[in-house]
Length: 212
Image 1 (cartoon, rainbow, N blue to C red):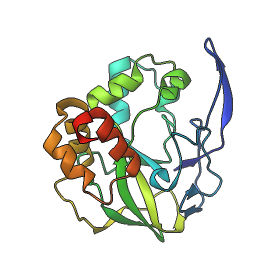
Image 2: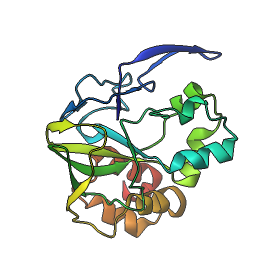
Image 3: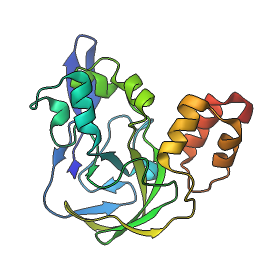
Image 4: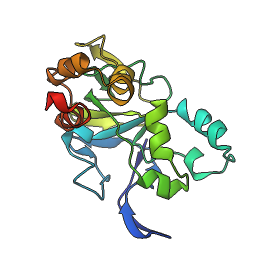
């Protein structure tokens, strides 16, 4: 689990601000509707809000990125919260969770509401050109949670499934259909899913203009 505040970075393209450099925490943290206390985002237009309260990334992706990019063990991507996620999950991937899933974590209730759409700032922070597009191509997106019931969470808490209203709509399937297959019928089905984040419904309509 990691939290942090926006920082200013400098590279060849100039100065930019991001909270991607989150730091691991080992003590319990209060989770509210907008995220963890002590956590914030820099770009409030594209990040943050109730439907992006918690950013999750499967731990199993990191060995794949290391092999693909030939990263040394001490590369920043392989440190805690490598791409700036709040939770690095050891037992859940995009194949395992569905839109609308409700989990009990610590004393909080959270709900899967959208895949993560990768940001170009991860390319800049990590010095890995093309990472955004490779994330889309490989469907290693991670996903977002909204908070249904605030509570305290900490490292080591398990995700206990409480409800699964859409067992056929995994995060992986959403990514596969919209990034690669662009299936109109499935896109229409997704637009009718109340638990899907409104920002992703706009993405669906952008990717498949006939649904706009």
